[in-house]
Length: 457
Ligand code: BG6
Image 1: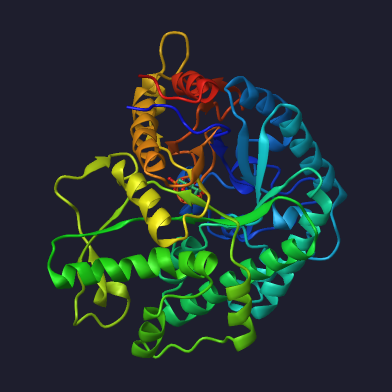
Image 2 (image 1 turned 60 degrees about the vertical axis):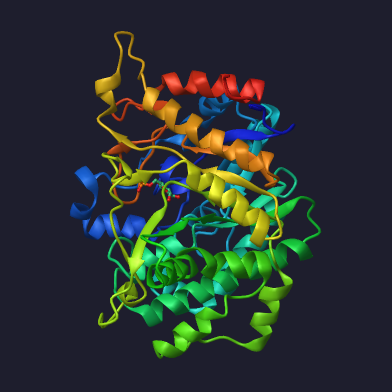
């Protein structure tokens, strides 16, 4: 079996500004919803660790970029912070400009391509106060921010991403209490999702008008939905889960239009969304150049509960597949073949658009238990996780899917929205006390794969 990846394949890691940088209230950065939330309800955060320091990339990026080179990266995707670059929405923060310019230059000088995302769940607090993604003004502010970013860094970055996982703040903030505004309201969720998409589309248009070279895309967390049985009602449930969690963004960004069933859903739920025909035309005209895909786990669904009053339960219900292998630390199913199914879905239904894996990884609690006598984490489970996913990816590529890169989540153990440092994902271990970094066993495995551009036989 072929174990080689296509020539020029991107090998690297993914991260995000708010989870990696730290310096939450330093160097002129404005506040985000996370800074505010931690201040007001710290007990919601695991071990009460907030977003202030995180992994201190802001102050240690020079050595971190050296480490990226050492472990064979030719690509690194992270996000810039809206609140850092434009603390009041208008004035450009010069410290942010020097920081990001130096990061991008150093990455390039070390042979690492910067893939730069504009938004990773980090709504500026001042905009949150005005309704965040429920307010049309946020769309215009985002388009302005995107334009400033293209103009300020466009000579160093040629691959831009508008959003990471735009469905997540919608689901977690409007159908759950895990992100702000922490409400349950399907109508507000739908409006927020629509304005997020519009902000994406306006940023894509700003990119095309800016005469930049390179490309622009979006990163979606695609979760293949598998029905419990072959019966009509279970298959229908899988279709709806796919529409809500994948196709609600995937179809408009790649194909330029929403799935027809969305209209049926809005009518059935009596939801009205503020939109204009001009905006629908913009969506059609501004599809992406490429897609980033985050994949961790699939969704197992069964028929909906017709009697359910509110919510998505009417359309589908999740269930625990008995044969599932669950990562006990995170509770997420491990199903490598899902990546292959995604690859073929993109090939067959999404114009075989160029795409890359933008995140894939395993979070593990208590990794200190795997430290060897020399202080190195022996994370064989992470190696197995990556290798198994990469084999299925390779099969998808062999069958014609246009995938050109793989980014593990993540480079260095980092802070997370819900679990802070509970589950560790990095190729490098972070000592929270000293902020010292240390390569794990998986970093050496990754280096070998990246540098040879192939999996071990
Ligand atoms: C992805 C997000 O969905 O999952 C990351 O883009 C996040 O920001 C990652 O950290 C892992 O999730 P968690 O909740 O285990 O940190």
